[in-house]
Image (tube, rainbow, N blue to C red; front, top):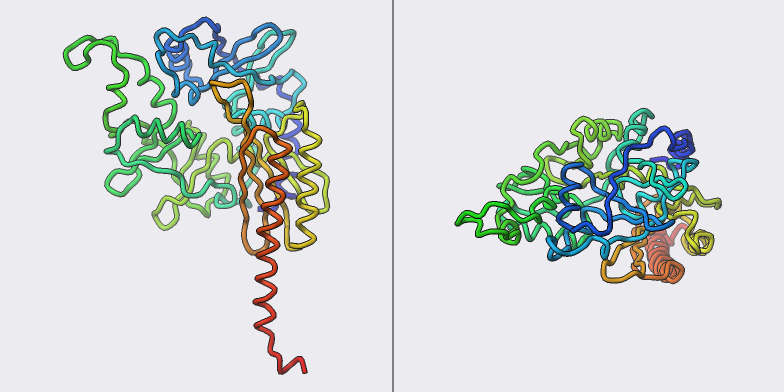
Length: 388
């Protein structure tokens, strides 16, 4: 994928204002019980819900709710997290950054302390479908080696995988082949206790429902494409199936997965630098946004001194919500592209500035060692008889 060509090609999408893309927001009250919120999300078929407290905007999503306990009595207010909403003048580039940063599927738009709507991830994917991306192959943006689960495993294990790995899609294997994909939205309704009181149900008991085998629970309509297919094909398949992911196969074997989040990376922000730099998931209103950009630039500038083969670099910043704490936890991934291979580095922590310091040390240390090894190998291959 030529990042510069893609960046220029998608300029009109990145700069598009969001006013004409607003959808109705699903609003909740902090006093609602968790079971009521789950019911609202199921009925509305929405991954995120929102509320306002004074001039602050809060949200909760489906994956956060999977960890909830005592959902019949517990109020959702204790699990809500504060987020920075969009304004009517925001662009889709800003929207994509927020969706990535907060790991959401819709971003609220606030005007005069009122939520006036949301911009959905699907809206952005539909716009991408209108701009030919046939020169980009799926294998350049896919997430490789997705975690899978056997259909005979328990639903509780699928829930644990989703929560511990912070993912939303788990392909299900039946007799060696992919039969379906179980997602957060498939598990969420199972948390609501059954209202049946027969001998099999024994009243309200959600835990027993999660102790059943996965079987065919999930979606069997998840599209599958080849790793060499174009993004036009992948995006078209996702929209046609009305799903949020596409599985990628190579020679009949599962090789990767593309989700909304992978597609949002096409709208990453470009940073001025000699080496093309792109950053995703960094809201401009973040207190140390400029510091983060400067540190990323410095990392790659120093890297090129010891590893001049760097063609481009990308950084992705995501926030990890901890329901038991108000403090933020970040996950930062830096991807360095060279003519030989792509190098990925991930760090987690509470201080973005320190995370980039640590990543800088790791990137420069490991790639400078690789450069020295390759130089030694090149020297060994020289025919000394031709030197003298």
